[in-house]
Length: 409
Image 1 (cartoon, rainbow, N blue to C red):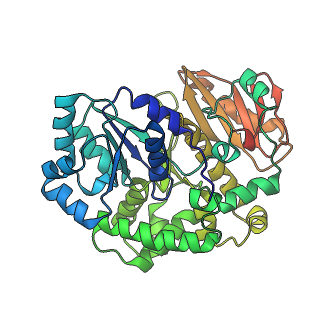
Image 2 (cartoon, rainbow, N blue to C red; image 1 turned 120 degrees about the vertical axis):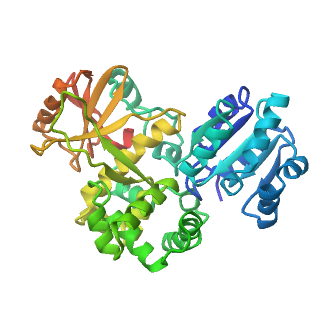
Image 3 (tube, rainbow, N blue to C red; image 1 turned 90 degrees about the vertical axis):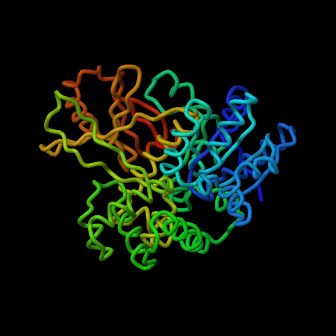
């Protein structure tokens, strides 16, 4: 099984020189522990390892955190730290006494719940990073670059990135981005996703919400997958899974907490009053979407009714990963108003709004960029826009509107 280098590696080693604690969050099986254990070998500092998936260790961490930290002396890597938030106070005491950079590396797969505990106990003492499943740049072995519409950068990069055909892109999208599948550790993707859902997701859902009807939850997550790249509609999800709306809201929150989905919120301000308020829902891993919605092959996914939605989900999640992997916060939105005008993604940065349209076409029409005018009323300046599509090379309609192949993200 081949290890695929992760873009966060250098960032972690860099931050470890100044922060006493690092918390790496992200969904299970996304490669957090594998990467940190490899980095621990590289740094050669005799870093210990303990996982709170081990019930004995968890019990001690919860009931006698002081003894736990005496047994597992820093520098240490503590896996699945969300199971013992009691540790955070003692980690804080240790950090305040010793001030040793890099003492605590921690992983957690329940993102928001963890953040709350950490922000209360370790505010200012811990660096928070998020790891998603593999990005296409990690899979291709090319450097991490947070996606933007800088013409000169894209022009320089187009020679360095291997072009990918539409069928190859859909194969990548269908296969998914979990390290276990991409590296060949689990050759049967269906078996992987089936056990991933029953072993991890259902178990974690029980942890977060007490009793849960496994059958209804499977129906629910499938209903969410069927609406990937669409506006979040709690009524429809509740109906599909035969649950009430409060449960649907709680379960969406849990999927977000587990790092399986993320919500893209609409861009709005005082000037753009006609914008809608509902967020859109995306998965970090399109392989899971294809598995849940039962597309049996990349070819069927490419020609099926969901192909546009799958491509949009893939593109938005790749943009998201490109920022997270650089340790940067992505400022991504979408635009939709009551006149049905829509922009798939708005990228905010450096005082500008860059509008992006995602289309499953190799030859986009210039009329696609007309809708970008709607954000001219916004207080921020409009930056360079782009159509992200299946084109085989980078080009442009004009200096302000680029044509960017999705494989360049």
